Image (cartoon, rainbow, N blue to C red; front, side, top):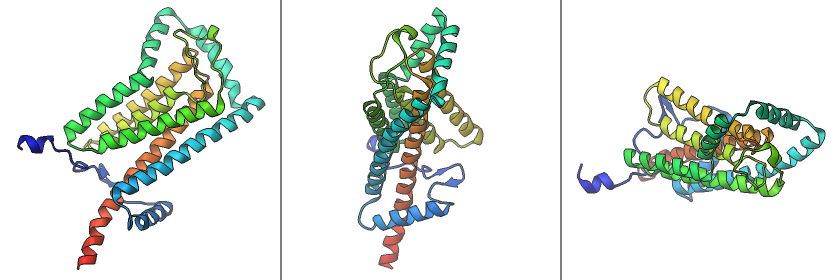
Length: 275
């Protein structure tokens, strides 16, 4: 391979349309097939890239709307002292378990899940994938994932404005932005999940895929729980962050699958027209 070819990026690398032996363009449910039929109708007037942009955009609006709705639901739950009743007892347990050494270690760890930490981690892994696979797919999907998760975080915090736990119960450095939802939990879930998804497209063994998913889950859970332990968030902030992060991840993956489905169908449609 000459140098110009080595530097040229493909729209996607070979094998990025399946996970193991399961094709991502095969839709097994009636709802999935209905969605594909609607998107294929849309694809008559827009490209596969346009379908990806439109579906991701619609998904972002849905996630931001659901984030705001979650804030309203939280307000009513808090008044009834429902699941929010877990917040104070769990924080009290964290206070009892703290030690200077553990506090320092978890403070360093939790910063990895913050805006700067996750940006550096996501950028490093994404660039390595783009370079190693000669594919634009990791860059495109990661940009969409990060943009949507940050938008959902900002929307939720501005809509709810929940106060963080008292500073007396928190480990410095202190944070002053609204507490709900946990941006660390939301962004770590979405970004770690996307890294795992991209790796699944290339991993050849079931064991490697299982380990990848487990590591992504452990990362997101650990980052979220570190926020509670350090007194920077209530448990409900973190739980909602996990749910929204998973929801956004699922929507981006669905948008990617629709993109692959449309791209696969469009050449067939051209051949049919020419024959």
